[in-house]
Amino acid sequence: MQTGGSIVGDVRLHCGVPSVPLGNQRDIVVWLPPGYWEDRQRRYPVLFLNDGQNVFDNRTSAFGVDWGFDHYGDVLARAGEIEPCIMVGIYNTDARMAEYTPPWSDRPGTGNVESYATFVVAELKPFIDATYRTLPDRNGIVGSSLGGLCALYLGFRHPTLFTRVGAVSPSLWFGQGMLLRIIDEAQGLRGPERLWICAGTHEGRRPGSDFSYTIAGIRRLRELLEAKGYAEGWSLFYHEAEGGRHDEASWSLRVPHLLRALYPSR
Image 1: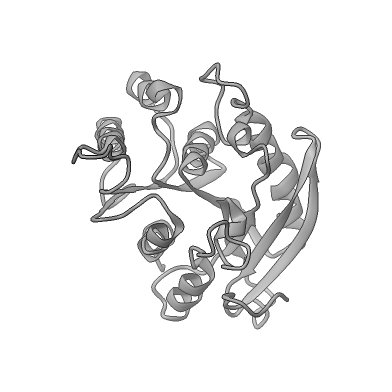
Image 2: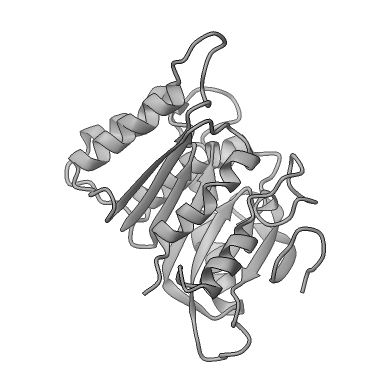
């Protein structure tokens, strides 16, 4: 059990988990919900988190501020406001740009998200299912920025596996808005059962301008998803964070809303 620093609850660290398709390795940090050890028969859904070093502990977070998934997960689960879930933080690597992006650009160092998907689906998930008491068919994935784009991609690529997806300030600009075009042109779009998308009003602004290309993109995504059958407040959850910026401090404020949307108490 890892304790101290900013961590709340029982967190297990698996160091140097290897990946054949990616040809590298990374640390994986697993947060167990309250009550996990009291009821040895109960199984839990799993929420995978991109940029996992930033989600639980400010000591490992890139900018010294973590998202607080452990804190909010503990408080909300104990209060009965969410369904308890196991959370799996997937550390990023030096190949983050490549691992989180689809092959939609000729920019060097991009376009390897399919190998990352294979790692998560075929290597990491079986390890987590074998090590912890999971509900193997109830998985979600969350990410921010390029990690949010990656989460959306995996959710629509594997909709029966990742039934819940959270895209926090996703990089919809990548590939000149290719994801938006794909959704717009899709016939019979299949996607995750519950989808959270959000952005902050101070993201994507040019100096001296009130226009936010980030907000414009996320609004367009909401519009397209609703046109394809998603219903806001039921299968789609949309949030604009007034004054929100593109950083962990802003994203952490959205975590309780995200968890309530993706894992409502039964």
